[in-house]
Amino acid sequence: MNKPSLTGKTRYHQGTYRPKNPQKYLGNPTNIIYRSGWEKYFLQWCDMTPSVVGYGSEELIIPYVSPIDGNLHRYFIDFVVLVRQKDGSIRKFAVEIKPYSQTQPPKMSSSRKMLTESLKKKIETYSINQAKWEAAKKFCSQHNMSFIILTEKQLLKGKKK
Image 1 (cartoon, rainbow, N blue to C red):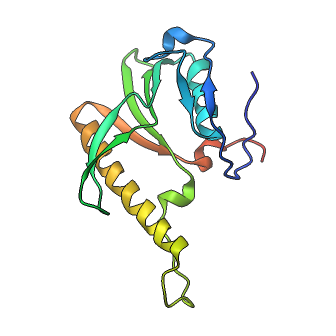
Image 2 (tube, helix red, strand yellow):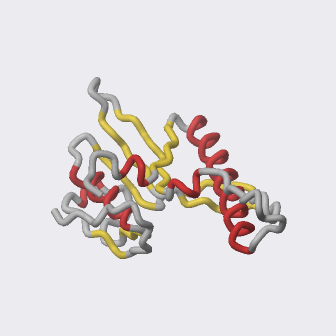
């Protein structure tokens, strides 16, 4: 299997994934979209891992209220994954793939007195992500699922950089 380069550097890479085991896919296996190299790598892992009995990409939509505009929006969870546990039970996961930097509060330099446009955008992105993730946690707790966020730190663990 050709594995994507997992250098830890964010590179915008998108495309359509063609599974080797299309029967495992929970949606239309001819229309699986990935929006980053990390998402492609995760799709390959789901497709080729025997304990994964089903997975879907952007098949679960969760409503959330944006802290920016106060309006209701739709959050498309990156992946839903069904994993057979050692005891034979199936555990459901809602999985979000994000750069580690987007999971941490933005830092403002002590030398800066004003917010730059870049910092404003980072604060907005972080705030929206937090609202989405709170909605996802609530949804998952009500539907017997686990919500996890994977960053390059987890995806690259044990990989040569």
